[in-house]
Amino acid sequence: MLLCVQLFGSVAAHLKVREINVDWEQPEISVTELLDHIQKQHPTLKSMRNTLAVAVNMAYVGSDHIVHDGDEVAIIPPVSGG
Image (cartoon, rainbow, N blue to C red; front, side, top):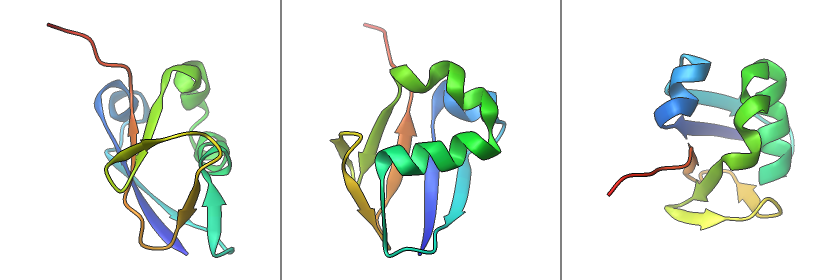
């Protein structure tokens, strides 16, 4: 399974990339496993991990959500403003 994970805002700035391709040997991956995998390659993710939101197919999901091949994944930092 090959996933293209889009990164937004401060996540993209800290990791210095706007997207990450994840090649996973299994047919599915949980959001937690996905973040663990990305964090191994980009350790700076650890400092912001507890504040991140993850969206799959344009809907916010929890850490136990299962991602499948072809899903659109986005990692989104907290947003403020008014």
